[in-house]
Length: 601
Image (tube, rainbow, N blue to C red; front, side):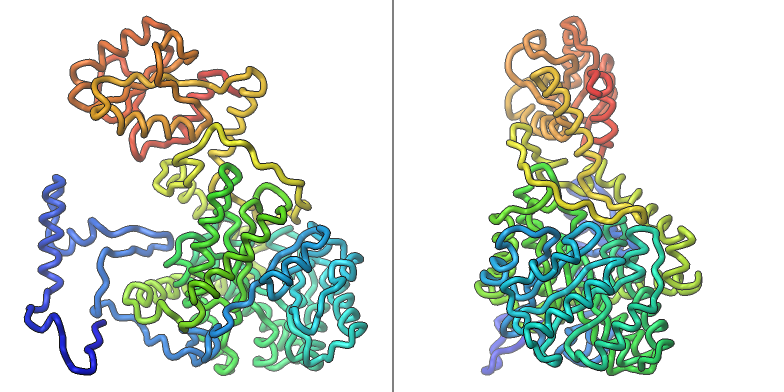
């Protein structure tokens, strides 16, 4: 959108407006140069990217790409934010997560940028009996506390409320969330919990603690089981609706019930999808509140956590970059609270440095990048508005399918939700295996010589329900096999890169092959002869022209030197070549089979 200056001068006034059709013709020309013949809309489709949930990202968005009116910040449908002022000027709530009692960690977080606490208690966390110790020195009238205690929620809530009373904190000054989430617990463990204790807590909060919520709608179990953005949103809506039903049956009004809920979502390094997801979530919940007869209660409160699924165990330092992008997306998307998982989250208990970097990620974005000074900075972007609308529609359809099947409790217990999430994860796993979705430091640009980062083990989280997946799991399994071989023999499995011609002719494919095989823990050898390399397999790397001249002869020479398997980096049909590696091949399958042949168990 172009806004003319006050004097009316437009620097583009002397130039004719370009049309969409003109742009398409230019695209056709570029594609033609690369050997692809497309015309009109097909040319634009050729540059589009397919996302999960049937969504497609097109290469160009204009004013022709209409989307529903997002409204204004703080007003229904709350797409642009739950509050008129957004998170400006102080920024979002920086919520630090604690699963164990580490000396000084809680106070260090609050004294150095953290503004609230998220305490995991009971099973997989801090013993409920240790809550007083965890909060020792914390000014509870200043720092909101959010509990995550699973089946121990009632006991933990009583302990926290008693602590407030002992410190003399007025009921109206209490802020936070007691964290009741029986369906989230069931998703994690497969164990159903009765709702009566949670209804009692909600009634108690509604009557006596206006700033304290009783329930969390945690969408992380569905995200961590491999669900798509629409599935995460749809499952959270179904959970929220289930809680509204229970709370209203217990005697609360719809507005009172809605005020007891806080929603928790994952933020990934896909920044635009994360922004759209948070905006879509608010639109959808506003629609639920409207249908329930309480449109004024549709302002969803969002707690956003950087995705555990995207965190890697190898080269964990790259996780700092992932969480920075995810935090930016959460802030731009309008999150009320943000938890940045430390970069070593997947390795065990974070150390002080990791916790500091996690805190400072939000601090830099708020204080130095001034991200919170603009309300809904992505608003008005034709791409973001369109993506928000399309994602909201996909999520609404998934939510409706859950409701048709009896609601969230029913689809959890029937196994239907598990099947849906598993299907989505299976499709994503194929993209990960083919490196269509690259993982920097793992499937792309791995560093075999990196020194492992070691941490004290974290408490085991509750299990028995939906699985917890990670993007790096297939490659981690391959690297573990290589590590075991290194420990047993003193050397990693090796592959010889047989480069043909000049560096200009072989460098690109040699680099590709080296990256590919290192992703499976196989060390590439480029110096000396095959006989001296210690390898049992080799890969030819060069240009197509040299392959036509030398591939067959070189493969024969490698076999004579003892090579049991000969790869070629590229495509084609050449005598003497056992298999081919190329962009888009199933890297996990290739690497697993290679380790099998090498005897790496």
